[in-house]
Image (cartoon, rainbow, N blue to C red; front, top):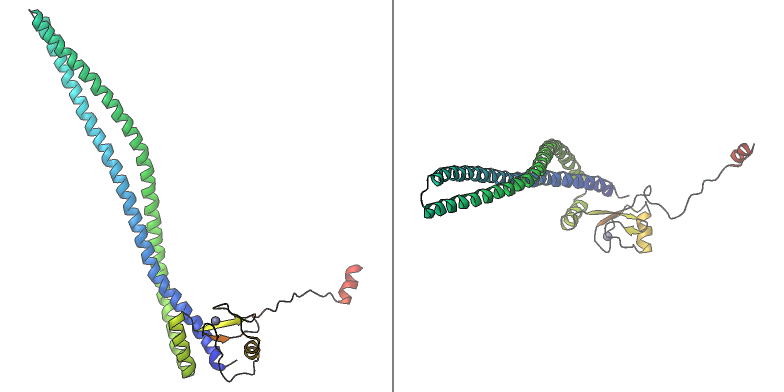
Length: 259
Ligand SMILES: [Zn+2]
């Protein structure tokens, strides 16, 4: 294998790892921000429910006080009714009492309806409480995990960058600049050739190129994929020919087994 190629394989591993670390350091705060927004949303939903429960309570207090007012009025008018002297007065007082009684029963019905709404709201509140608790716990956990991971990533990235800086000057200038150019455009500059295929773009290699690539004495130049342009390398240890290896039992072993 071309000596630069061996170093480029290591460089690409470092570059891929550096990218993974940088991506993770960008992604984790985004994930935390999403969880913060989610927590804020469920807290907001619970606040709406709490507000509605409070409004129902205010409504019922007013209804109860109105009922008391009407009942006071009924007993006051009853006393006036006892002292009424004319039919016109009696009719007027009875009318007033009847009106107040209708109001009392209307208010009592409305109070029952309000209590039913409160009951439904209370079960919504229980769900909202649980959602807030879950979201808060998740947020705290992920926030901690993110800050721990980012701290580790920073350390790892510094190490990777140090290794890259040490390795790059050891690579031939033209191979390195080719690698950098392709990596910039395609994300990776190097591709493994396996089973006669470029593993980056999945295109088949022509038999002659495949043979040249596998010819380990060919250290002259670095081959590129005709389809994607990446620098190709071949690792005989990774190349799995499509033949199945059937374990062959030795004659001695089969004799021992048959005993
Ligand atoms: Zn390719």
